[in-house]
Image (cartoon, rainbow, N blue to C red; front, side, top):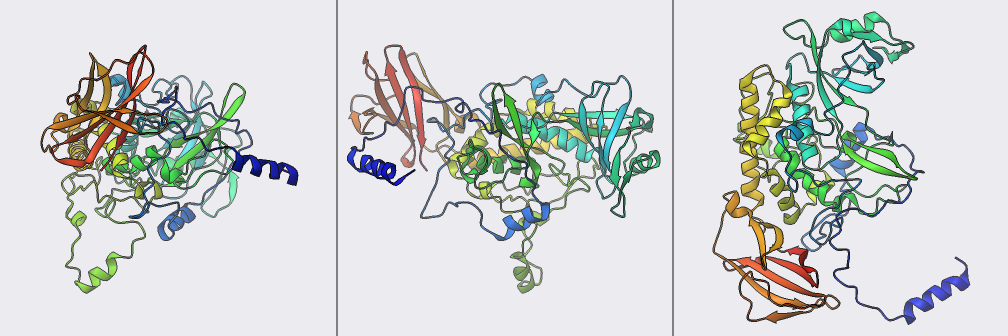
Length: 535
């Protein structure tokens, strides 16, 4: 911009009177993100695992909520809901899924073809977690992972289960399948290269593939069990971080620490014991739709969930302390080790397929992942309520249906994991549904404002009856004018034009946890257009 244009812009800025913004617009509440701008210039990036761990362990990244400054989620519509799009899609809570849909997960209908061999096209032989990439006879590319020798079925089972829950909860996740095969099902592709134990890249030969299979537990019939994920749609462009924005993505405008679906993920992670919920286990892909390319954000790699630490069973410390946590050491020294933390009392069943997973010592509000995740740390009571209402919506039977996809050979292991998830679900409801007034699903029916009272539905603590007062609401000034005669949930007024009402609802004498519900009245009817929560 040249100097004359800059002066003109400044002159206009000071000469045009400021007009108060309306609280609601004609298209509120928005259900979908705006059409994305073209992001075709986004470049792939890498994130080092150790750097990711150290950066978040020792530096306070992102803009944090404090006692003096509270920043509510910024990616939500007027109802307090994230919009469907590149980050999130409303699913099970809003549109209940059948057992079959819950079990299918992100796709569920494109497993590797049984016709012909599975061709290994790349592999990771060394290290404690071997795996490879293969193509089936359809030409589809699959990433293959296995269980540790010490705990058959544990990591593969956990990944199958958690991927289904996170998909039902609205996230973009890979399409996972369990496979069972014999060694002769695999064929080594041409020109496959890998790095050997000396770090040298060389062609892979059959003995190398045979060596990989020696690191994998065999099933009773002499075969192998694995989990595969089909290649995610789009061009991989690296992981996302749980703070800040991606500078080369024109659609990434809300700092990640202020995104509701990422803040709430901390509650989901606690339920599923997803301690490895780090940036390194995310993936952005550049997706082409028509003439626009945009970045879609995925969660992935759920081998360290439930009782699995991917290559071994979890110990009690997982979820109780950060991976690099030095604060507890001085306390242990002063007390000569007598100050036993609550999580150290955890006891686990002797099921190799389960690993270290339990509910007795589980404290949803004290559970922590491997490092201080900026989004998780930043969550507020309304973020937690948004997560908890979705967790408690899974019925016992639905949880048991999802656990079945793990195909555990021991029915006791299957039953134990389902029972533990149910018990942890109930604790999440008791902790987070009481932080705000837990009313939801506001709607208009037969001239009344109706809603679901989750305190009653999920046996949370209740204190006193519900009260409501009504006001007319000026959408341009946000001023309220009380309607004294309206004292129940019948909607007052019958304005043939467009007007707004505000209903303030609280329980007992606790006005601190008040909900304000806004309604828009038009000639076509009355609809809920906004919800504000206080605590």
